[in-house]
Image (cartoon, rainbow, N blue to C red; front, side):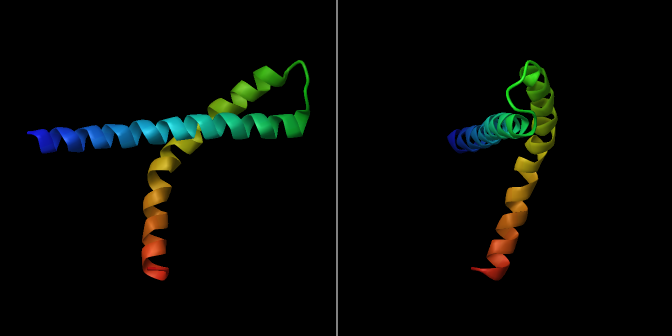
Length: 79
């Protein structure tokens, strides 16, 4: 049915959006923190990519867990 297809597409969009956000944010944050910690050195790219892979692995599941938890807190204490 069209409604079911729209719901599936919405779920797909949500999943892709969260993974893309985790990808971009972990990429930026790991680069910034790596530069702050070691500066611009010959090993920057190698260390940064290793750091990014770790960050992305941690952040991706959190992008699915944290928003629901935050929504519950906001609903309970603010709304």
